[in-house]
Image (cartoon, rainbow, N blue to C red; front, top):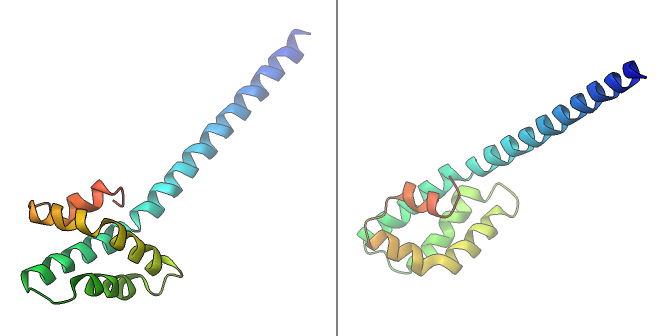
Length: 112
């Protein structure tokens, strides 16, 4: 009947709205989690920049210790940070040498 069909359409519309709301919430949670890495990234890159200016020896080792300092309390994130530094160290240094800001570098790596 027309009433049953209308009721089915209303239920389908409510279900679709609920699915879209859940998907939007998932996206917001992901973005907020990703945003959680912004500040540590900027602090690490800023410290790398300072270490370069101060001509610190063993720069790569220094960078890895920054990961422990800033992320050591967050499970395996310090190791993930070290892996990132090891993998992208030359590129990060090139960006710093080309006057990229820490903010721009972290945005480039989608951490902010």
